[in-house]
Length: 220
Ligand code: ADP
Image 1 (tube, helix red, strand yellow):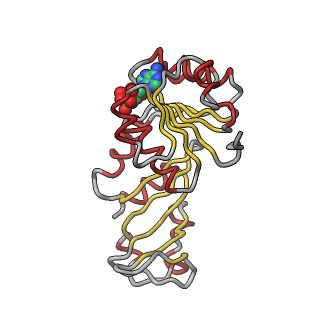
Image 2 (spheres, rainbow, N blue to C red; image 1 turned 90 degrees about the horizontal axis):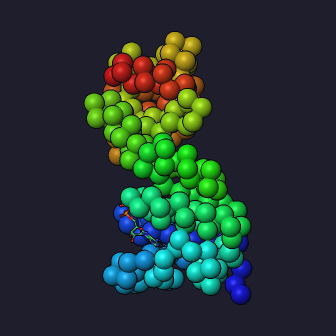
């Protein structure tokens, strides 16, 4: 049998979420085994993915026959069908898959998945909703929060920084944030240096405690 333990990922459930996961993994160069019980969906993915099979993944014997235990990682994109989601995670855990990622629709679903053996639970809708809330006012062009209350955002330069170098505006001591990258229109981002001068239309990549980063972006 081929050894997929390093580079291989099993993706189960080829809906919008699982489909995007599978497609991106292929683009990143991973061996992907994609499984869905829906025959039509499997057909429609067959030209974009090398290994797509139709199967009900709630049964660990089925997964074993497909060689899922050879893979070190799995992503479960089943959401609405709670029973199928939980039984699939359980079957993967029984096969000893070392790194199981699963999508949850809400916190209760997520707790069940954790108890059942998922190593990572993701909440795509809740996370995207929170992200959009940060982006909708237009003050942040991008927002990523890490789970320790630390965030990194893309935002415009506050008026007080325009025409000055980062060293001169002392944003870190004033606002508790760090500017890590600066981008002028039609150029690429460059690493922020003490001598980097900020122009009016520049975009900044700023990181720091979430609350402070939010307050900094609100200045613009
Ligand atoms: P949601 O479940 O949140 O609506 P999607 O519809 O985007 O998510 O994707 C769920 C996918 O998982 C569907 O394509 C569905 O066919 C697949 N699926 C559901 N139950 C099973 C199962 N028991 N075995 C394999 N695939 C399944």
